[in-house]
Length: 119
Image 1 (cartoon, rainbow, N blue to C red):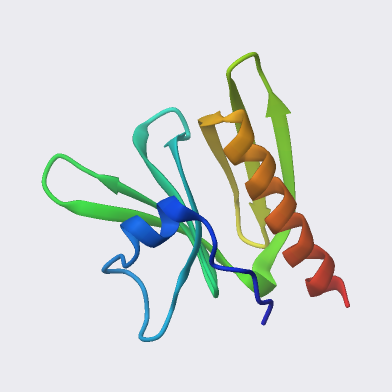
Image 2 (cartoon, helix red, strand yellow; image 1 turned 90 degrees about the horizontal axis):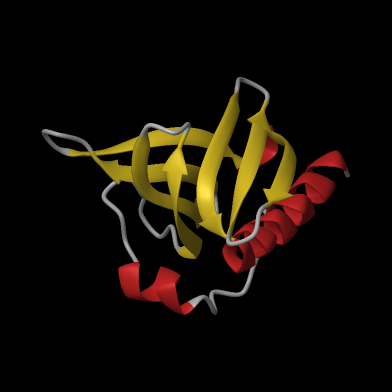
């Protein structure tokens, strides 16, 4: 399992999500839009990646992948926002309207995870 510094202030303020396992820690969080449908947060923990959002009825999440199943990541930068495409062994997820700085950070972290997966 890869270790990343838990120095992202937003991740530490938002901290724990009900979908996290015991002892799991947030690594990075960024607001965005999932597949042009739901606004919420892209959340990277020390074990998995998921998208957290509020639906009409309840709090919900879209599970993306655990570290070993993340295959590739791509970022397309716009003027203000970027689009992050994350491919797992199961599916491809597009997160839009992420701030450029956050998208670059996610891209960097996920690229390191993918590189470690190939070892």
